[in-house]
Image (cartoon, rainbow, N blue to C red; front, side):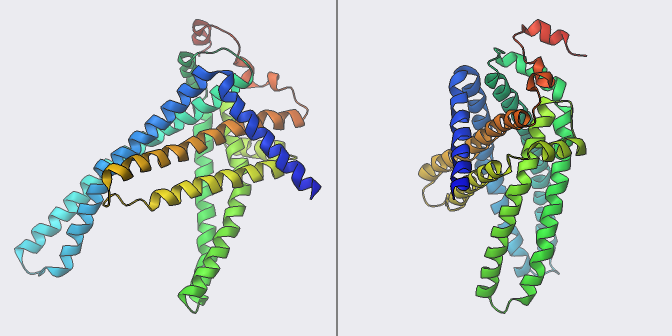
Amino acid sequence: MASFLDVLNEVVDILNESSKLFLKNKKLMFSILVFHLLHNGLVYLLSVFAIRPEITNLIQESRLIPMMDPTTPEYFVHLIRVFDDFSKFAVSSCIFATVSSIINFLSVQVIVHTSALTHKDDNVKIKDLSVLILKSWKGPLLTSFYIVLFSFGYCYLLLIVYFPLFWSSHSLADLADKSAALFVLFAVFESSLGIVWYLSLVISILEETYGIQVLGKAAKIVKGMKPKLFLLNLFFVLLSFGFIQTVRWIDLKRSFAVTLPTGLVLVSSIFAVRTFQLVTYTLAYFQCMGLQGKDVESLRDVEYTKLPSTTLMGALP
């Protein structure tokens, strides 16, 4: 019991230290936070005003197909219209998802770099962050690719375990009980895996290590920090899950003028949690390296020195 309380106190300490980080360099930290929330808020508004009506219209048109006579010309005209609408929706969704993913990918780098700079009390301005991103984007991109592959493997494992439960269940109530227990088990397992995934992403941004190598390094240096980071993951997962479930309950048909701002606030809260989680893992990285007995200043982030932007530009290959 005493050991658990000690770990809980460590969790509270790192959360407190992460919150103080925003006060050390208010202009830089809050500018990054506002940009991240603004981008994701615009994504939410676009999904409400553009994507959701397209989905609704496509569903309504698809429901008319079974009611029509396949031998009539109107049937083929309507079918062609549905396929045409679907192709337009698929193209616009792919473009939208690609642009959003790129911006989110860059935002993750900016948040980690900014947290590291603020933690080290280095005075680097917002315009200098673009130089740091240009020098480090390849590492986190490759690491993110491996993390996505492992995530797909994790989902595949979940399906393999779930299907026997589905076929062996005698009723919907029985299936619901088994599914709830299974998803809780896998959520705990995912929180454990997420420790290495998040930490490897931070390492690939701050160091010249990436891919499988960075995943192995993250698993190595996290020793001694797992209980604390595991509880941190559970905290962020539960917090995000609560916001996501609240967003799903919003019905835009009832009172659009009220539910739209409410949904925007909730979506912003979800990504604020995501930002805070990245800040926390950046601090956890420094703590992990300290526990390993290594001089963090000797790593790649030693480049975070008080240099003018012209010097930083000169460092580019």
